[in-house]
Length: 533
Image 1 (cartoon, helix red, strand yellow):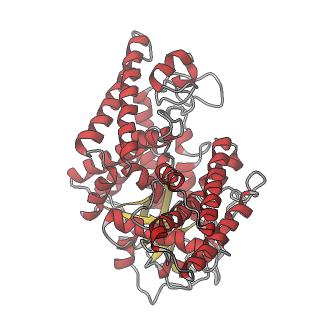
Image 2 (cartoon, one colour):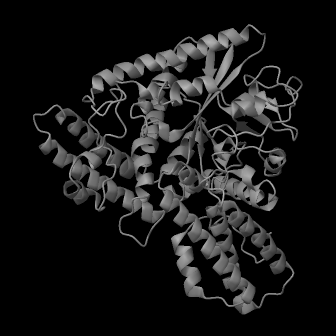
Image 3 (cartoon, one colour):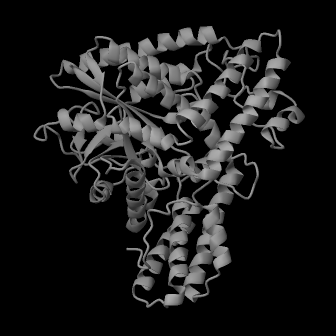
């Protein structure tokens, strides 16, 4: 074997739960990802295993996503969401009868029914447990991530906040997967000097950064990103391969932009009258339904009808191109007398959600590498760590600051439209540290002990949720900007209210209970005593 490929998918969505509304547009973000990515991914991985293929895929599932997948309210609402889509697809079968779109209407109807059947019957509405079983049997590796997907470099000078993100993320992992994680996905690949020491304190053995985090490291890495290096704290570090990323990720030059693939944006939720669509979505606005009849076609408003057959032909061609490209690269690198490892890391939602054909592409790639006589194999980081690394030959370097966001550093997260957030987020971190110290050194009356503890825990939740990288991203990009701003403001206001209640000793249980119901997250990770230590 001349080399190795790590295929890593990072699954994450911001924590969204709105029990106060019967239907929520933002909850559909989760339902779309479940329908288009997570359930199809589980299905294709299990089919590989049944065919005698161990996929060795690496998967990061963020704690907020896990919490939502495990939430009983959201599970029930997903089933309702699928019922509504099935009803819509039945109507589409009638509307498109004898037209060029009729075959796709039938395809969607069948897929929606199958997805609901998989979720309710095979997975018993428990996707997290299904992924856990695949890991327990050694077919995939699941790695941990930060508690609420905070972009950690913006909290470099608030180590308690960074520690909380890491430690609660690890506790969430242990609770849900029954083992200590070895690897850790840094949200947005965000790294700053000294972060590796905090990861080591939490029991992590390796993590991942964007390519220039290693390329610009000191001393200069002898094998660039194609051999894992060791951080100053003694953690193994893998650098993301930008070449393979561009082939798959880039909308303009990558595979998903091919003119034969389904166009993401041409959805009947925008093309058809609102009074027709809203009968099924129960939302008084135009929105995505997942039913799309057109292909990419090109940079034009005029889109050609989607051909499933043509798209599947292109998927096979692109999968083989990806395999051949990695084989060529590994053979070239092997001439330098070392065993290269290529890290191809992507957002999980690229496959199936953004790129409709992406799950099938992944299926063909993994099968093609596993079944073909290739000079390389897919390997998990844990296996690479245990079998392929000789500590005497691993180079120690100081990792450079980096992220995989636009520009490669921090400008996306601290930009013109979102920089004002951080004085509030930093103030919350300072107040949380102050609150912990005051509680530690102050006697608490027994009658108020449980309420104060609950208030402290809820304040911690509000602080962590406000730090999610999703909100500054959406604000900077101008996508769902108003919702993102409202979410952060809401967490800040609730935190400040709790802080005042705790400081004054004036606890109002009804207010606290309302906050707890809205953000039911991390109930098993936060401390049960009043010291929050």
